[in-house]
Length: 77
Image 1 (cartoon, one colour):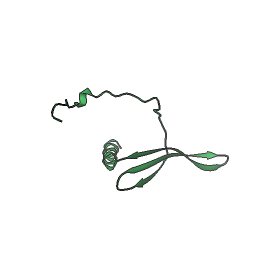
Image 2: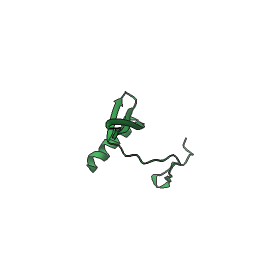
Image 3: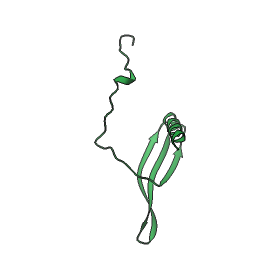
Image 4: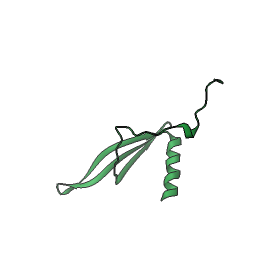
């Protein structure tokens, strides 16, 4: 559509959802398909004298976003 104005990156505003959370994880399980990558974030902790794995959240992304995440982690760690 030639008459539509394209949005430039500097025109995009960033907001924070009311559902935003910060999650600490010390355990990650991953699954893959042709269409997405899924990361199950969890926390291992001692509960009543035994170890327990508590699942906290699942993050699902496209393979393209997963590659971006790999690059960020590789450059950071």
